Image 1 (tube, rainbow, N blue to C red):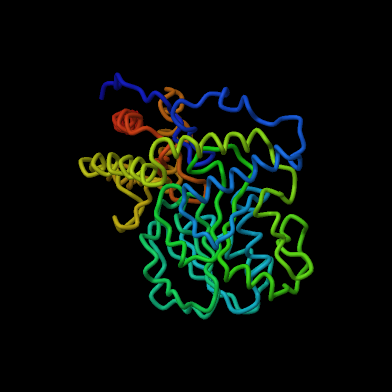
Image 2 (cartoon, helix red, strand yellow; image 1 turned 60 degrees about the vertical axis):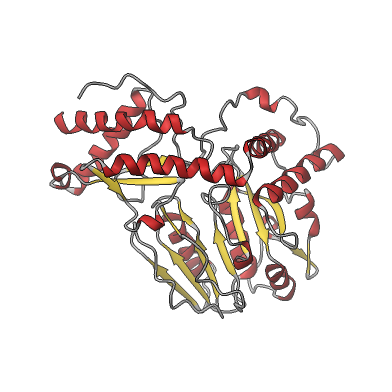
Length: 383
């Protein structure tokens, strides 16, 4: 197969940190409040603006709180688990690497007495039909390392007794979330909006706030996890008074992404851009016999972290170690060509490819990438 003529204008298809918004340059950060305290009046105003603009773009309910927290999505999820779990039994659902890590932390670090792990294979969703919502439930809305998402929140009752905690880092800004069905939602700036790393966001429902103010965990809490003081919510966290020092450059970058999102039409436009990227890949996969989606059910295919498996009989005849090496060769070859960076599957996931399709990725770049995937596979197979 001859080498394609057209290359993506932007070869950044990493699933985190993700591609910057189209047209981004470092000049977008020129107004960053550097050299000033994040607790200064302008510093707090910028942080509050991120919170307000985030709620506006996402359509977060007025009575839900939104705050900036340390340590990316990981810190936000751990904060929720360490401060809220243990009041009642909890069911943990996982179908990829990060969800499995939350199960491990609940069972082996928090050592919860009544914690049930429900883990599905890569490409599958767990069975939610028998979920007991009198218990707390922890799940990952979109499996970043498996490319499998929850299609909707119909299975979550409005009159649930427990809390629903949803790690949504590769879903927020790219999928419709049923906010009224969720009590804690977490994500990070470096995922769907392509912001800079190290900062997380957490959204709390009134029910989550009530849990925080009525329940004290049996274990000590590090400072960066504390959301209450004297039995009351630390409200400043949700008004721009961060627990620790944030990067004001990262804050400026987050604002730039939010402004871009508003300018192109808000959440609906972001979702449409991401779904168009998925459709282009789906149409291409349908015409190929060497590749398929890792997600078994089309309804659960992620439109952000799009995970593919190689299905060619030659490839499947290889030993597992050889398959992993060949898949890695494809990603390496495309990297060397400057066509696609960082598209190998996650280290804990089945060997294959993972292409980020969030709204900051241009459809034209996805379309330009696809012939290169065919070319790279042919090179590896023939070589």
